[in-house]
Image (tube, rainbow, N blue to C red; front, side, top):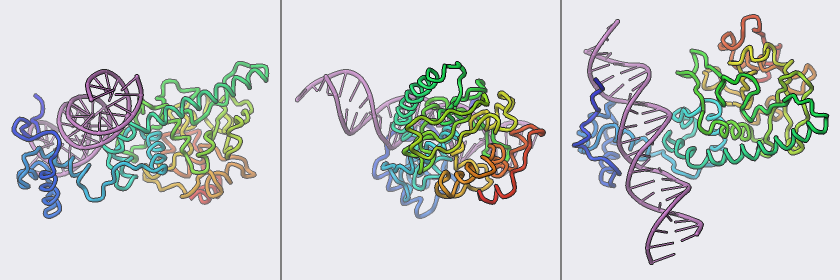
Length: 327
DNA sequence: AATAGGATCAACCGCCCAACG
DNA sequence: CCGTTGGGCGGTTGATCCTAT
């Protein structure tokens, strides 16, 4: 037996709201609040509408602080970065954008941003393909794929993983497991990476990891113009033995530029400003001691989830001063 | 001017989950 | 512990607008 519907759909009005209905709902909520009961609200407000419909109308349209359209570049970045990290959890994404609703963000992604991202992804793939095939021919073509681009979000290992979100959150983190950003996933990955930080907007590729341990290739010419940030070789990723921790960030390809995960996981925030500039990762990545491993970085930002991400033997403590300099 | 096809977005649907009795 | 209820969420639909032919 299914659930009883929240209201009798045959007797309530459906479809677009009239200005009169809007006014009734607006004035009632402003004067009385929702009373914590949307189901009873329409009757009290004199509306012949389903309670859920009233709630939706208020939240998505009538609320006083709602913004419609006119998305800024900054908002695009936030949406793409978060979609890249957590998938289509629009309510969470919208909560990071004041005045935006989940419905609005969802529509914006589905109708505009996804296409934009897809186009960028294809363009990026073309560039990568032409660059690396050139390199292979030039160097004798050892035939081993290497220098996978993190921002392309398709890891060379862990084929069983989803295309975009590779990380299982800790129980203390977001309410449910991070799910695949399937449709448009690659696009989101690409776009998320490309929009990862203000300093790299003109120069897409952020970091490359080299999983076969060979010396990484230099970045393509176009990328050299920008902040070529870090090249994580296999050796630097402790414990990333051929997908042994494929569910973890390193093998799975967590985008380092994800500036929102810490906050979502409730363990604080990344430093504000340019993550890859002087205030961000850059000094660490180029410090004398060598680049910190992903695991070391994670130990700073995700101390509580480390145990779940790596095997006990791999558990590392961050180098002295690293966490402090990050936070 | 008429029409078709695409784009946009408000609204609905159905499911999940927490609260409560 | 279990069933019921309402709130919240993401996916989908359909009406309307826009643009190209």
